[in-house]
Image (tube, rainbow, N blue to C red; front, side):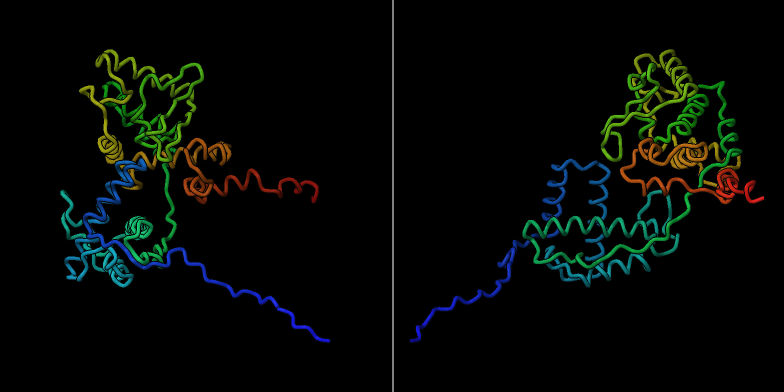
Length: 349
């Protein structure tokens, strides 16, 4: 005797849709960007980052208008427009357009580093608008940054270091200040804005360290910078000079009028010494070159890369590796010192 039985069927898969509705809120260029930058300021971005976002968006929208695209809302920007803009930046965009002191007759086509900075900035803004419901899809989704050859970042030779330090006239206040500044950069590998932010109270004489506040650091992390006894002595001597000439000053590095020194002013001073000594014809005489020089010298003197990473304030060893560019002579000398063959040469003979 047969009986009918109900057979339970397997349910078919249902596609999951995070947002089945395609409705969006149209936002014109200006209010969309104002909303974006207000949110980013609320997230605590730095002033420099805000300026980069603002400039990138202004350059892009100016180009949209110049090319007479029929687009007034952010959702009307297409991937084709973005790729055409990147092609324009690569091939046709005049260099230093709108610069106060440099004329536009500097050739066409921006550097890959500049273009990639704009691509990243546009990615951030369009992703924000997508998440806020102003777009169906970001036009930057499939846009990749340009491939960039990894440049060799040079550093000063021993002879160049001696020449640059010796060029400072220590009989004058400014000359002595510049000498101490370069000495500090070589000893600490600090960034220029970090070094210029130092206050006398940041220096601990007992532990021979400088405390860098998080707000002055690129990665927003406070860190301790160890100092050599020679550097500490020079810093204390400069502070005594400041107290003598400018009582009540709250920074270590001051102008000849007792005011704070900007990074632009100090880099001009470093360039001056590069021009005076002829070093500037061979390599850029900047605070950043001093930072790379300090990193290379640290490794050559036996320091390990992980301690150097902490000293430089990097979050990854990959970035630290870029700072330690060894010359062919460096490699040869270290090979002569540490080649494994030295261990077996006598035994084999």
